[in-house]
Image (tube, rainbow, N blue to C red; front, side, top):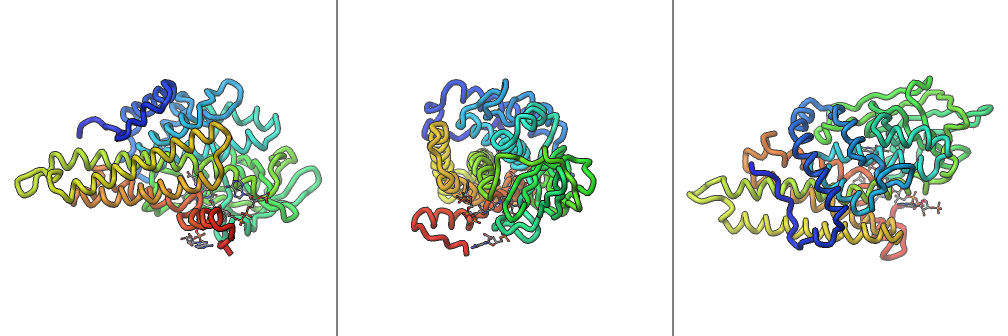
Length: 388
Ligand code: TGC
Ligand code: FAD
């Protein structure tokens, strides 16, 4: 295979600042040179590439968009481009960074006390501390408002009981943001590894996101001090506001995975010969490439517009749902088509497409399934809640 050529049919590069291009290109090169040589093996073994965590810290991408201390304060667009490039490597890599930045550092930054910020944000930015976000439960996925995990006030602290499931980074985490109901109201707690009664168990047997850690969190009479409560978050809007940040990154990331699949089949079609000609010379093959490039380009434009709205503090949660839903759906369709275009070779790990395709099944499901985002858009259009 020749080096990666990122599709940019409408010269969207021209709409980026020099700094945004620089950040994007730095991460793109790092993914090509450092991450891609590792990922197939890690995926086969079903493990996250822990060895790159310090490098992610050095790259400044962990919470790199937050306005805190000496963080790089990337623009929303630069941050999105980083997510796009990371997921060009693997959805598991982008997931690690999304969870750390958007689901753990963001709630600490937005809802935490000064002491919580000082304790966790610099260490997490450097990749020296890792976090996870526990919202989903075995019986409550799309409807987190029904959560059963409870916190009870106990003297000068709280006691937590419950279980969380499908938690990215769970077994790697030094700290978990656990959402629980206190007197019926959803509150966030920072639960540190080693706290008595708190354990994690990795969920094995995944066909998807194999190069990512997914775990159960078990909380049995876990006593945390008063200082573990995130003081600024009260109600379901706390965790949902974090999801809006992470979904924004996923919208960009899914396009990165689609770009990887597109480039792989574009190159493959030029060299694979059938009926005496490269398969890229057949009209059906070209039609598939044309459809892929069209959807990638449309999604790139959606993301860029959303990034600019976010920079102007004008992006809404519904616009983020629109972008996440569209990007995940189209990326998965592109990956499925690309898998087909590679023929039998497409089922092997000599090619990255099927890994992306399997990953995108999770990406389409987590952070709100396709249908949940359909209903969010439905409500935005009609004003009618069709969830229940
Ligand atoms: P609803 O009554 O609509 O809302 C409750 C309160 O929250 C506010 N709100 C939001 N705030 C900020 N951002 C959003 N996106 C918000 N959506 C709603 C809302 O205004 C209200 O505020 P207030 O002040 O009136 O109380 O709540 P609902 O119970 O009807 O649920 C709505 C629904 C279904 C859309 C929501 O629950 C939902 O999004 N469900 C999907 C669950 C989900 O996405 N889970 C993700 C778990 S984390 C994860 O998957 C990480 S994977 C990461 C990785 O590995 O990369
Ligand atoms: P369900 O909610 O049971 O949905 C099953 C089906 O029913 C879906 O098709 C859904 O669209 C449909 N459905 C549900 N409600 C409705 C409705 N009202 N109308 C129509 N259709 C409906 N969660 C975290 O908290 N933290 C994490 O770090 C995290 N990481 C994850 C990593 C991976 C690899 C995966 C796969 C999941 C992760 N999740 C995480 C959980 C994820 O957010 C949930 O899986 C997702 O929200 C869907 O919930 P569920 O799996 O319980 O499906």
